[in-house]
Amino acid sequence: MKPKTIIRNGTKGGAYADEYYTPSEVIEGLPVFDVDPFAGEGTNIGRLHNWTKADDGFSKEWNPAHLYWINGPFSEKESIIEKVIEHNNSIVLFPASSDSRWYGSLAKNARGIFMVSGRIKFIYNGARIGNPAFASHLFAMGEAAHNALMNTKLRGLYFINSNKV
Image (cartoon, rainbow, N blue to C red; front, side):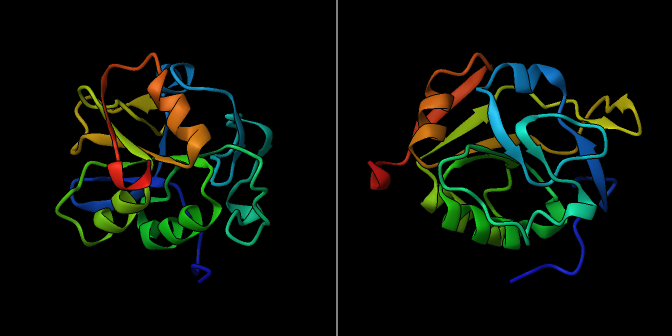
């Protein structure tokens, strides 16, 4: 299923604002990623590819050997979940919304879930958000992502999905 538009992630004040960027301290606590399929303009998280909205990361062929970084777009959660389950080699940063309809599908297919300590202060319009409206989880999709989150320098707790061992 291809979404109508590709935009970045996040919510603020109850309304979607999909231009929230990952702060460097989060990326520095994780492995090097091969591809960021939903990159913001001017970001360089992926060492091989940083596909922007214009590149349409959903329409690209995802290489199963490449580790992908997924930070939104939050407004396209269901489409992203479908794609990362199929690809099975990515780390997904999504809100810690365990009561949401989409959360169960992602969680049951993840190798593990890293619950980030505190709230990530995303970048929005070039400035840090002082107090985001949500906590965040990192979902390990596949073995390489699992190994990365087992060894992360980030603060938080990692839970292994015993159904995926």
